[in-house]
Length: 138
Ligand SMILES: [Zn+2]
Ligand SMILES: [Zn+2]
Image: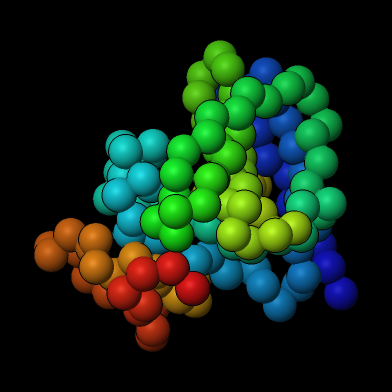
């Protein structure tokens, strides 16, 4: 069973939908430095999805590529107008993408994150909320 989630960027020029398995409606909390720099916050909330589960339904995205922790390229897709970023593609993950779950409608009701990653970059005043925390990526 899967469910379709819709999302939009801050300025609403770009809209998308993503198909997620019903049992994966939980966040993966990422503490990495790239997430801090891109979001301006202390962490981001994400989920993995097959690349073809994601569809743009309005507007277009720009791409910015940087070198990830693994040394492999990471493509970061974002709205050229307001910079909201619906997903990343880490080349190391093959045909999977990293969807920003906080930008999906209804995700505020998903509850405590299922997993935390990049614990090595966690701010020391930030409490651990998931049961498990990995020092780096999965
Ligand atoms: Zn936008
Ligand atoms: Zn991160």
